[in-house]
Length: 318
Image (tube, rainbow, N blue to C red; front, top):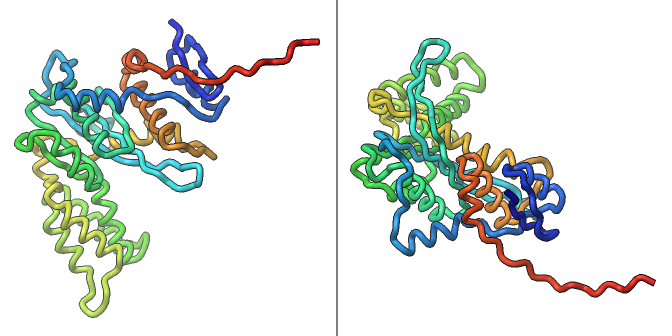
């Protein structure tokens, strides 16, 4: 079957049903000129008040929605953020050391620049995955306010759990320790490892007290210590890691960090690339569709606008 690509050099047809054709098109003409159907579908579903039908035969017990953002470069060299959400389930597996790990499976992605559009897209994707009937929804992220203020409210509060990424929280601990005890010193390693262990097995209260103890009484505390204290004060209710671990929850948002790299980073942030925002988002939609195995569905919903141009009369050959 042939597919139609609309680029700045006009329509092209290809029988390559993968990203390679789009990549070649981008290399040749420098941009994509097409309207992604994703945003339109989201607005239509919201306007009609209808939810998509579920695609699952078995309702998931627990469904995850993890989100993160990443910057790409505009033509003027300024950075602009595009956000990606991953919807997935988890499965326990044994690693090489015999330890139990909770791995993400059946991951699907949505991408958008606008936060509200991303939240709605993530919700619609989750509904297709059985979110309305799932026993629990887990929303995870690095602590960005837009995740808790936009994505979490999409789901019923009584069965939604917010989890801030454990490893992101640990970075604040290490940064504070390096500021006070010095980078790569034995004191920093002992202090930071102890606090990370306490955070994982006891929760954030003791760690917050340890961070506050780093503040001198006679001078201004270091900036990174203040940032760590503020972060733990704001995110503490999402750091009940002992309970999360006991319940078998995933405490990291690595799926979201991987999502922004796969959907956006490896394609839009190649050397020397600059993007017009609408083109960048369109490419992100294509990437999300490919990585979610929704390629055929994406093209089914794609209705390119007719190309408008004025044909120039060419001089007749002598």
